Amino acid sequence: MRINTFTLRRCVAALGLLAASLTGQAAEPWFEKFKAEASPQQLYQFLYAMPKGGDLHHHLTGAGLAEWWWDEAIAQQRNGYTYYTKVRINNCAAYGTNEYSFAPYLILFRNIQGSTYAGLSDCEKGEYKRLQDLDSTERQAWLDSIRLDKPYEGRNEFFGRHWERLNDIARNPHIVAEILYRNMQAFGHENLLYLETQEGADHTLKADGSEYSEDEVVAMYSRRIAAPDAKATGVTVRFQSSILRFLPNAEDDLRHLYAFTDAHRELYVGVNMVGREDDDKGHPLRFLPTLRELRLRYPDIALSIHAGEVDEPNTHIRDTLLLGATRIGHGVNLISDPDTMLRMQHGPYLVEINLISNLLLEYVRDYRQHPFPEYLRTGIPVALSTDDRGMWDSNMTDEFFVAVREFNLSWEEIVQLGRNSLIHSFVQAPVKQRLLAEYDARIARYAAQFQKQGMAAIKDVQPVSYSFTCKRYQLCLPRQ
Ligand SMILES: [Zn+2]
Image 1 (tube, rainbow, N blue to C red):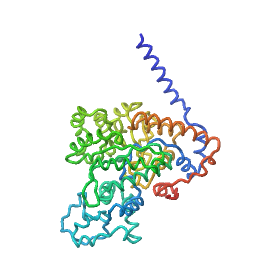
Image 2 (cartoon, protein in one colour):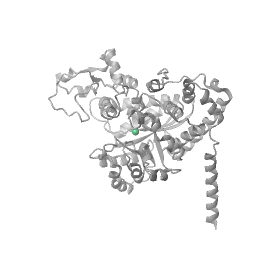
Image 3 (tube, helix red, strand yellow):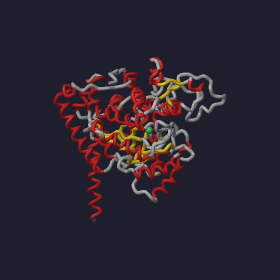
Image 4 (cartoon, rainbow, N blue to C red):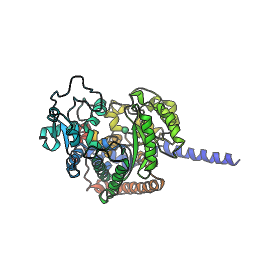
């Protein structure tokens, strides 16, 4: 009898919730009016100043703007590093070089540090220049070489060129720590509260070419986010570690990551699997036995796993839920798997949506093909995130701008996206409660103030934007 009463109460409560979401009480009129009347620039300014929750899908070495990499690489003289980049090809290598490796020979603007340069032949040394010696044309080309700035650059350029070019620069933990700080600073200006970034602590380089220990690197990152200037950004940061899923030894890497993440739980709150999914060497079920083995030993390691970032319909998302993931990165092809969609509606799983990434890497041709509104409006928990914003030359506001422009988000939906990003974050529970309370208070205050004063409430806000919105929406604002 008690069970019946309880069940009945739950049903009534659920019906109430359903009614609230279906009766069209959505669409706070003030926001509808604002959308109808605002210029693109005013909408951008509103979204820039608006408090945001978390960015849950963020690759740290993909999140450096080209200018940041440049500044920080040059500044590394202070730690004894000098960087060289390849500006010409003198046919120094024999014929038949491996252009499919991580170190292709026929690639310009590949960056190496002094210790690597010292080991080159004289012929190859003649192909490289110190960064600070580039002329202005070379410098511009260097900057453009690590962002998707041309119409023909897409998935292959991104997966097969950008990381190969960054190379040694992205293995310097001093630089990576500063790229993190600059993200915190920029996100702080956008009023983002929380950042969960993906970056490991292995395979880093000292100036002499030897490696730092992982503990040294974790200490370096922890110190950086605890420094007064980083704290002043107001952005709370946690890390995820990730494996490259299609490598032959990926199972061993996963074992290592579990041990590493377990040993650094204050900073590292989850494990991820990355790498292009159309390489089916990294298919999800490959990792089921290893994860089951690891779950014999390690309590409560949260999993967010890339899945469904692929063109073909398949069951990768269902398989990834079976792996134990509670968050799915991208989920573009979930739309082709109705059973799994049904399972995820009003469920405990979140899909991390990356609107700009999916367009630039050609998983959708235009936004009318993007499944985000279908997920959002059928009750699948979703949040917006930036993925590799440095390489898209974009920011978090851009993701909201795309979402509002292309899918006419209501105010309630915007707030739900912000709340979802904190509710589903892997940050420790007390911090999550604090962030959620702060978000609720700030977003309510923001809405109230805007309703009272309109644009006057944010007249002093100077939004920063990059080339993505300029090219796609002809909204060209200062970069800083
Ligand atoms: Zn990603």
